Length: 330
Image 1 (spheres, rainbow, N blue to C red):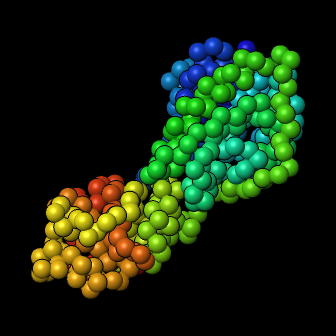
Image 2: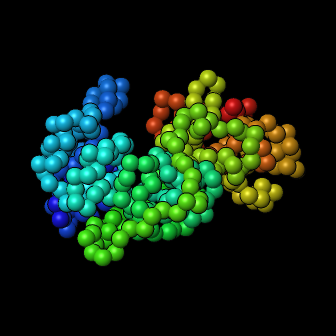
Image 3: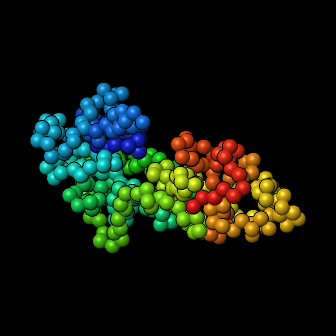
């Protein structure tokens, strides 16, 4: 089958790798190169780089309504246009060109979480199950008829990045199955009217942590915002990002372990006394192997962090060079 595939982030690559094994990819539609780094050098999208490496024509129109671009798509005569996280609204004129339409992979069980950030929103809401949906694009947002859905459990501690990676592999098989069966008797079913919810793009303001909340709430926000935009709090006047965290259970049972070895030095009841004294949410404590933060109902471990102006590192690595008693996040 002749395909034009559309996508932008690395999440789309497992799907396009899978389709390229069985079909002819005529061209790739992706977002234009974007400035990156301090030099603001223009860098092609991950999908654009994937296509260039394979000698596939790359289409990066600034406007999808451009008559020359529309004419080019018609000239390529695609049978179908699979889409994974392209990041732009496909016009009706383009939707009408391929005989089997534009087929989109969405990272939720539609009609739940229509929009740009389905995985992040599902994790923010504490969903225990999610999945992928392959559906035909229509003008309305993520509202087209559904070909296929696959469900998965959300693993405890899984970040948005972890889950997206897993769903992209699952979605590759789902998309390949749908494209292979296009034109046969099975038709997509209309989405139900019940259970519709929206998943707008998450913002940096939403990623701000409130350290007085419960550990479960904070860890859930950290998971949902990792790796992008990254949950954060202020350390002094600088943003301190937290990419991975976990609730610390049973502090009273930690006296025989490395955890809170500094706190134990306070005396016979060192651990409990220090916990009572350091009750301000955001207070940081460190051992040789870990970094901990006081929150509204206990402590969490800060497993991976990004200090301002630094690369990602373990919390313990940061603490060895920067932590001292009295330091806190706000």
